[in-house]
Every structure is written in C-alpha cells, then in structure tokens.
Image (cartoon, rainbow, N blue to C red; front, top):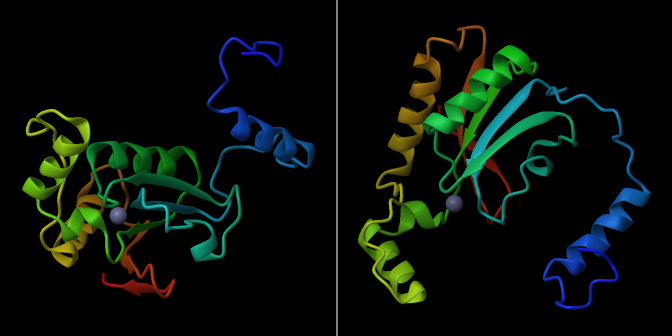
Length: 172
Ligand SMILES: [Zn+2]
C-alpha cells in the first residue's frame, strides 16, 4: 500500500504512522542480533507482560520467545538452542505468570469460548492448557536442562511473574 492508495483504508495505518515516528529517533541501525546481556526468556503472550522492562533490560539484551502460557515447546527449544550456540545466551528464564488463561481455564472451557466466538466447532483445535502451573514449570525447566544441545554451563531458572505486583517469584 502507498499513501496515494485510497481504494481501501489500510487497517494498519495508525501503526504505520507510529512506526514512522519511531524511525525518526531510531538508534539501533547496524546493531547485531546477539543477546548482549546473555539472556533468553520464554514467557507468555499475555499483554500484561513487559519482558524487557520486568528484568531491567533494554532492546538488544535478550532473545525472547513467547507463546500461550510461556511453555517450553519444541519451537521454544529450537529458539533456545540457537540462542545458546549462536546468539551469546548463557542464562535462560522460563516465566509463566499469575492469572494466566492457559492455567485458569480447562480445555473444554477454552474450546467452548472460541467455538462461540467463531460460530463454529472448535473442538479440534489444540490448546496447551496447564492444570498445575508449578509442576508444568518444573517440567519445562527440566526439558531445557535435559536437552542434549544445551550445555550444563548455561544457567536455567523457572519463575512465576505476578501480573498484579510486577514481581518474579523463583520456583526452580
Ligand atoms: Zn498467559
């Protein structure tokens, strides 16, 4: 789309405007893609989480992988292996959070809500619900530890982020 295209309003126009403003003071040009603070973070997609801010980090410091629930999935492990071997990562944090929809609802409830919103059957859709957040977190941290391509020298921690206080509680 261009500025002269008036056939349809671009539903992203507000964001592109904001981006042009952002680019006017952009200072990260030519910056490399490594994790300058050596941090990789797996956390939830939840909009209440500011992954860099909550750790006192800034752009360039960390590799961040997000998904519903902040789970260590196969894709998360792929990201962590790349982070450790190619992107300077030596500390990994796995950070689910309080009041997460993925651990406060059942699979049936989420499928019913999505089905109602979509106006069609959603019972076939996978949703990786968590029944016991702390034990899921311990399992997830273990998955990272147990990965053959993640060396023992990498420090791995499991934390629960409190979306009401902003505090991290280290579980493992
Ligand atoms: Zn969540």
